[in-house]
Length: 419
Ligand code: KG4
Ligand code: ZN
Image (tube, rainbow, N blue to C red):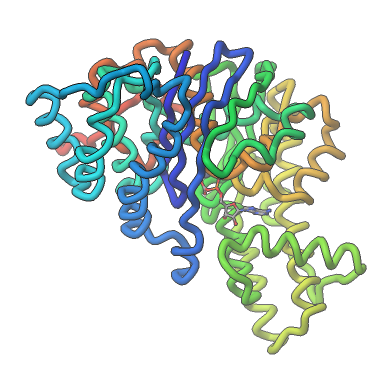
């Protein structure tokens, strides 16, 4: 199955073109354009700016992705004329994305139909204005090329990225993304063993999910307040480190461990002894704030020590709850994904605790948001729920709160006003 995947749920605009049979994967193209430099000045992601950037960059990225001659056979096809009906449909679909519409009509409509089977797109969870941009592009391409759309849950995408966790694939990490988006790389897709538990840790989510099979998810626990990545970002702000804070804290913490520096104050491990699989990370960030305020101006050693203590407190909690989740469910494997799974200390602790055979952590280059994971999840969806191959994608809607427990929902649940 050949899939073009689109991911715009947060601050990364990403496209992937792949072919897979569920065992082998060919990546024809994979591009991730990060907006982090633009959002840094706000200390976090600014939704309307994210949407504007997606809208502006999607067509240029698609042009780059389409350089692959195997899929977009420009040389041998004559550019086609589109019907008035199609044009109207495209204009209507993209009416809220004027910049995208202009570029679409200017460039994409002239392309010959590519050799693809489906267009996959993230429809939640995430920032709704940003999600809509990707969905609208998917709908317009579907109208132009007469291709079905497969809606994908962003978190199922993160889970799908752990299929590429093998040693072999990790070695190829750096090649996942190339300058011009072209690479033709071949990968083996790992076979997840069910039941599995997924630890999903990102800027917006922290959850433990029991996965009985593809499409069968039960949330075992989640954060009651801040996500783990969000806690890293907030603690980093307290320490005057730049956004996103996770990698900055991690760098300082590693340095502190190497030099034997410790924190001027201890931090409690949040919810470590709670009798459930819930998390809470807002207290620990407040504790860092209160205790650093008390100390006044921090020197470099103190900062590094605090970063170390903070990282170890978060990681202790993530590892302990994952262990409980595996014990309680009898799951075979722990799947770990999401931006925070790039954290080196977390990866080492997980490997030490569970052993390499029991864990699959997404390759670092795929731990953040990317379209390759969306393409991989789309393939699974097409297998377990063929009704999600939408020949008419009109009903598809963005759902910022989409939950893995409702994998077949494609539109937003509207609350019954009488209930
Ligand atoms: O999955 P992701 O790219 O986007 C969301 O869907 O949220 O996750 C981004 C989050 C940010 O909060 C960032 O600080 C965190 O992942 N992060 C890290 C590391 N790299 C990224 N946190 C800890 N250690 C890291 N090395
Ligand atoms: Zn994510």
